[in-house]
Length: 201
Image 1: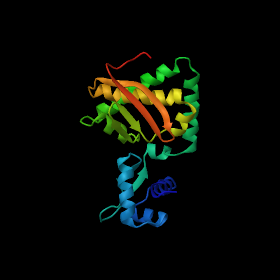
Image 2: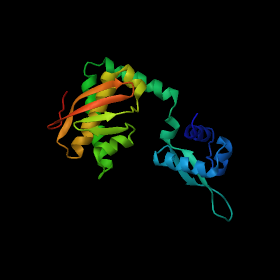
Image 3: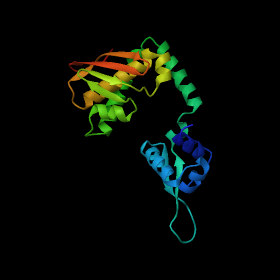
């Protein structure tokens, strides 16, 4: 178990939240190291920092608690739910088109929420580990690898829509003409072409 997973598990076991010292004691790390990991978890939206409710004088400690996303993070039951919903979409004759359209909407929303960032930066922050090489976008990490391996027609199509949506929202005149999943075990490649965003796949 890595350090951040250990911190998440410690917070999952605490209803009231834990301060830095308590977390350091539980996970066996220096407080400064715990603070560094907490800052990353807060930035990722998995942990919230709240002042401790206390009576009397003195500066209240900062307590850390899991957000809703943090509670769901890496839970098997949510993976099972995602797998079931993916199977429902895959069984729908229009599922692939609907997955693409939803991806486009999500990509546009992500790009709009992070105005000023390049689309590749937005995708990178979503966990895709992207790098552009000419007219291709290489993605060396899939945030939903297990689902994509079982249902690429749904998950990879959804991802293609996310890229297209982010590109369109940024004003780009390119779209993903083809997405090749699993060119290598940890590499998917999106091929870009000039033109307007396509809908109604």
